Length: 121
Image (cartoon, rainbow, N blue to C red; front, side, top):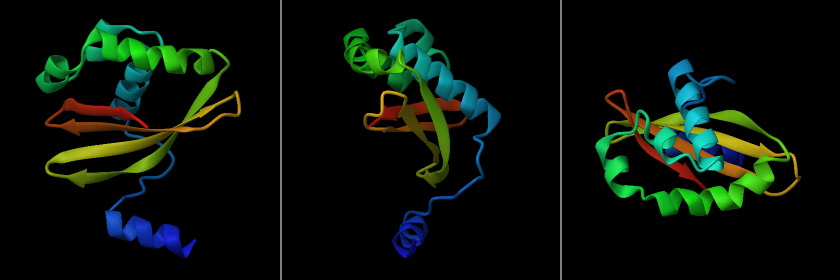
């Protein structure tokens, strides 16, 4: 427990309770759903120009092919908190799959009202 507290203090992670801000929760779930179902156009809704310029349809398809079989068996999303760096607010989520396999750590970043990053690890 001490290690976790120390980690939280060192990284500046702020725990915001059990719920993400409503706009972030909607954006995260939309992007996760689009990723799972390989919906490139839906994924880009609300994304900043850098994401639109960088992400290629093949990149989304690759991730979709990995996630979809697991997601089809069911999953839940847990909000972990957020941290701020360089003008971006990054929210952390855990995706827990019902297949009992490894969880996925997910982040969604926002700057000036636009989604500036979305990562699954």
